[in-house]
Length: 153
Image (cartoon, rainbow, N blue to C red):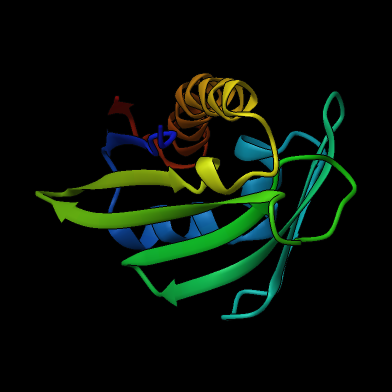
């Protein structure tokens, strides 16, 4: 059996340009996504580091940078490790204008390539399903704090 990818989205009452900043700039990522800071070299092949006080530091390699449209990266599934075969998934964030707001779609794939049992792959996927629901709520709240945006999942 193939472990399915995660697909979710949120409608955000903010222009694409503002949402792009919030999903690609370290000062924002280190607030709504990670809770202990972030670093980003925003270019294809660049690195992304996300730090959580409770979960540790996760590293990523950037695959796609299409300003105001698409941002994708591969990130490790264990803290304090470098990207290697069998230890990462791929996240793609797609921004689409919708009226005066933005539809942000998130697709995370590659759970079936993790060097884990099928049960552990499914568990990793489920953990991230719950994680994305939480993080997209944090994104909505962060945007509201910095500019009055709201959103619904």
